[in-house]
Image (cartoon, rainbow, N blue to C red):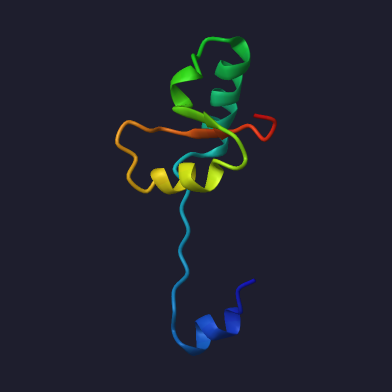
Length: 74
């Protein structure tokens, strides 16, 4: 929650951003569902729930990592 009174009282500005708009999300969804996009490169590692904390810490220095998929059943 944001107390907008504090924004006014302190003359603060609140800004937000999003890298993609609604139309781009819909297009991405369409491409994924059509099978025209290979999603495998988006997952660099698959880890168990126990391995997740260290795996996420490794994203602080990603190198070749793109994304980590946590698979609790592993």
